[in-house]
Image (cartoon, rainbow, N blue to C red):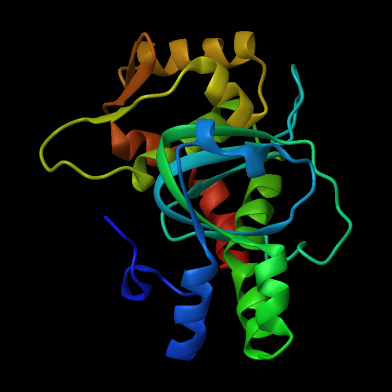
Length: 230
């Protein structure tokens, strides 16, 4: 189904004329396997996630810090670095099938040359992502269990809710390791401990969240820290 301007959660108030022009300039990408422009190391446009969940990770194997963030529906990215000569070496992983609008830099430049409102749009495109990255960095200061539980709960709240059913997260331990920045052996230790406490259950390629209140208690310190940047 074709995306209209009313389907998009715009980051700030914009004129309808600019919304129409921006949408006309956008390229629709279905899934990360069909993403030639995403394989480049430099950021050369703005991206809007219409649906799905992806992770962007700068964590290396066996790292002990979390340098990753989750992006889901109605998230904007790319606005803050589009005019910086910044080269990025990131792992982009699709957690839930994504539909993305890609706004190429050359088309944004063309619009900006006649409409200053474009720069306001670019500025506001950066705010949510900046908050996500700051939360990720704060999370890296805490213990492994808190980081893993926070990531699972963060994933859960981005999934479509099914009333009356357990929350099932379809994710591999490799993907969760990239998101948390925790090596797979240490990650597996924590997951087994949570399963033994009957707070989660594990099966190949997915994790069921059983005791949400108990899991939430494990992230209270993190949530308190995040309140300062909300």
